[in-house]
Length: 313
Image (tube, rainbow, N blue to C red; front, top):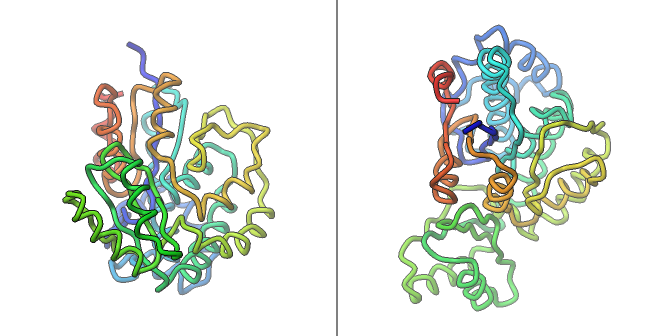
C-alpha cells in the first residue's frame, strides 16, 4: 500500500525545559534562528534560546519556542529524508499554535511572517487571558454529555469547549468558578478523569474575543500564498484554498473550539494513512492512535528520531 503522508505540529503545552538545544547547532537551521533573532527583541531571543522550564511556562515565549523547534525539525526531516527519497507530504495540520507551524511549513506564509505573527499572538493571548480562568481536560466522555454539563455549570459565566482532540479527550475552558462547578458536576455524573491544566488562561473561549480583534491587524499585514499541500484548519476541519479568508479564520481560531479530531478524520478521508508528529512531545501521536488505530503514527521530537524514521515511511 502506498503511503500518503500527513505532518502534524504540536501546540502549547508540549514545551519542556532545554528543548531544541541540539537543533540550534545544525547548519540547516541557522537561517531560521537568524530570522528569529532579527525580528524579536534581545530579551525574548535570549529567553527562548535558553529555554528554561520556568520561562517556557509563559505563553509569549512558549509559542515561539515550540514553533522554532517544530519548523527546524521539519526542515531537517525534509532535507535529509523526504527530499532525498522523493517522499511527498500531502497534508498538514497543527493543534492551535501548531496550525501556524503547518501554514509556514507548507509555504502559505514565510518564516519572517510566522515569527512576527507568533511574537504578537503570544503577548496578546497572554495579556487577554491571564488570571481570567483556566482549562480542564475531560477524559472518557462525549461531546453531548460535556456540552450538557457546561450548560448546567455556566450560570451566565464564560464556559465552553476549547478542544475536541480525540474520542477520549475534550478540553473545556472558562472562568474559575464556572470550572469549579463543572468539575463537581463531572464527579456527580461519574466522569472520573478531569485534569486542571497548567495554563495561563482559558484559551479558545470568548474571553479572547477582544484579543482577536487586536491580533487581526497583524494578520492583515501578512502576504499569503497558495500551496500544493492540503493544510487543514482548526476552525472547521477543512482545507485552506485560494478562496479561504485566512485572516478571518486565524482571527476566529483564537477564541473558537479547536477541531483537531475533525482535522485528522478529514485527512484520513482524503487518503492519509501515515501521520508524523514533528515537534516537542507525543501528545498528537496519542490523539491519532485514539482516533484511528489502523493508520501509521510516527513521532519526531529529536534528531535521533529523524535518523530512525527513514525505514518507516
